[in-house]
Amino acid sequence: MRRALAGMFAFASLLTASTASAELVGRIDAEAALLIDKAGPATLLAGGGGGELLFGYSFELYPVIVVAELGGSFHGAGGDATYLVPRAVGGLRVGLSLDVEPSAAIHFGYGNRRTTVSTAAGDATASAHAFTFDLELRCDFRLERSFTIGPQLQYNLLVATADGSELHGLSLGGGAAVWW
Image (cartoon, rainbow, N blue to C red; front, side, top):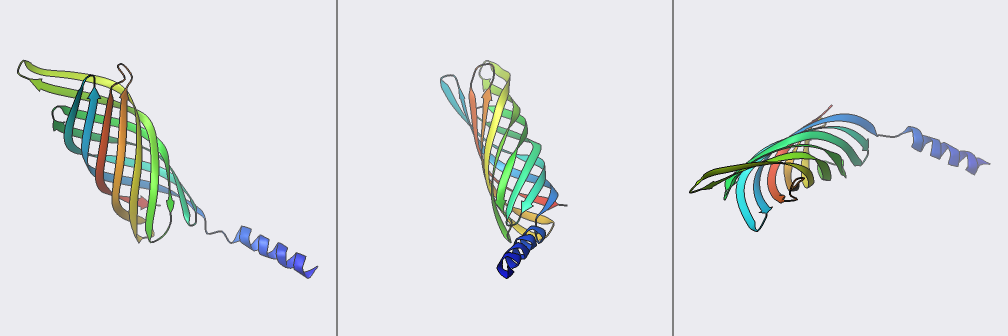
């Protein structure tokens, strides 16, 4: 009988001694980007930069972090062509809540790709609506309970709905997050 009571007490203490909490998160990132445009027979390269602003709701299940995120980004690049790429995305981030916080995220959404190609005959501009997808790896450093900062590596894909052309992006940057 004592063992049964001790077992029930231990189980009840596990249920009530949780360190889990839910928090709101705001994150801003700045990135350098390389874009690869697979439009028709040509492959165009462009280098540039941009940024991302995300807001999320964190279900912190210590030491695991699960964050549902919504936000947007804007990137611009020049090279063989000039690109302006705004995106609206939503997704999920999963990581570990430690002094150093590794995490991975996946986002899906809607974007627009505006491309300008300069030729001897003049500029040709095209705009296409696009499905967008990205994968992100980051490693944040917790400076305070409510503030993290760290580098990130991100892969982006936009697939235009009209012609199926693809715009791939690889970006390296950093950002900061506020947790409240």
